[in-house]
Length: 120
Image (cartoon, rainbow, N blue to C red; front, side, top):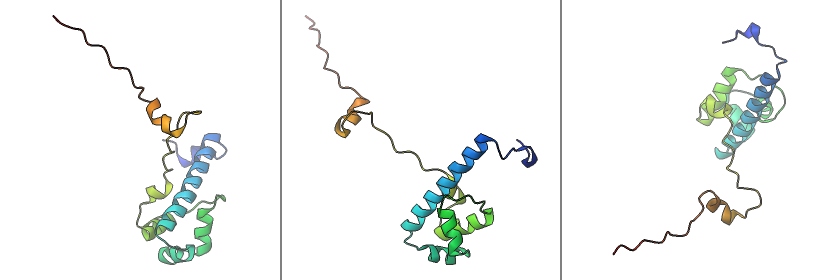
C-alpha cells in the first residue's frame, strides 16, 4: 500500500477516482436527504455543520470533506459513511434498437418445442 507521501496528486487515476467519489457523495447525499424529507438547513442542524457546507457537499465543487464531518452527516441521516461515498449501481441498459417489451426476451430467446420421437 502506498504511503501518502508516495501518492502523486496529479495521477490521472487518482483524479478520476476523486471525481467519481465527489459525484457519488453529491448524488447520494441529495437522494438520502430528500428521502428523509430534510432541507439542507435541517440536515446541517442535525449534523452540527453549516447549511453552506451541506450545499458544498451536494455540489460537484472540489472539496476535501473531513471524515468527522462525513460521519456526522451520515449519522444525521441514519446511514453509514460508506452509503454516502459508494456510487449507486448503474441501471441495467436494454439493447439498443429494441423496444422495452422485447428487451427482456432478448436475453433468453424462445425456441420452438422439439418434436418427440415415436417409440413403437
